[in-house]
Amino acid sequence: MNTESTLDLFRNFWAGNETGPILSICTQPEYRQNPDLEQMVELAAACIREDMASGENVLPTFVPDFGTVSMPALWGGQRIPAAKGGGIHIHPIVDSVTDLEHLAPPAPFEESDFYLALSLYRRVCERIGSDDIYLRTPDVQGPMNTLGLLSDQTELLMTLYDAPDLIHQLLMQITDVEIDYLRRYRAAAGKERVIGNIWPWVTLTDGQGIGITQDFMPLLSPDLYEEFELPQLKRIADEFGGVFIHCCGEYSQHLPALARADFKILGIETHYPCTKLWDVQTALGDSLAYVPYIAPTGLAEFPTIVDFLKSLDHHASNRTRILVCIARQWLKPEQLAALKAWAR
Image (tube, rainbow, N blue to C red; front, top):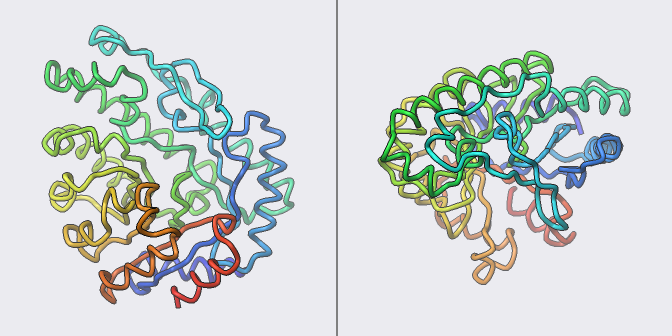
């Protein structure tokens, strides 16, 4: 693998000069959410070395994944360790509007997962013996996602109607913290080294843009999403040069609002059949890139992601920018060969 040629490939892709499909095939980062931090460093170094020797279009990258709770944990809540095959969760700390009104200040940056990620990143670089290593952010949940993980969600949804000014105020405060901590994280690591969120494994080059999770989006009506979340998403996008949106649910009801958005959307993830790439493309056009996946509910129709991706040839135009981000462990050798043949 040549780091500079990989960077050039993605620079051209995000600039719209390369439509793809582009493949980014990495080694499965099985050290994610590992409670043994020493073991996380050791496994991460081994994973990165494997990527460096693979010859694939992937940068040597540390994925500091501490679960979806990295943002809400700043405001408290007991972390629930990952069970076998699951992820880390958190006990909500907000049960009522009164709790929302008295939300404590966030933990300082030095006590955050962002600070921990920087410490582990330096150790990984030392273990490998190279500073030419990239990293992702701990899971950046959108402001509404963060509030949803802190709260009883039924209570939160009711408060959107009963006390909208309070929700606007809280989302502003959460966004302030997200921008501040992301700014400090990128400055400490070198913004050109931070290439995206922990999922999906898109490569955002030269410090342009961030990846952000919008999984609360399917729970909101179009009007509520546009009123409460999009203004905060715009603040984040304007601060960092754009956003790449992750949502693995049904969000087609929000496509008109996203099409009206006056901020830069670098790309968006789609999960067939929850959200179909061609429907999103019809609404949002070719100014952004698409990262397609197939949800478990689509496996009866398309047994593998390769079968699904081949079906996109009937829908995508020659201007459609498609980026496929997967781990090589997901596919059998013959499937991986078929995927590379399709991408050519």
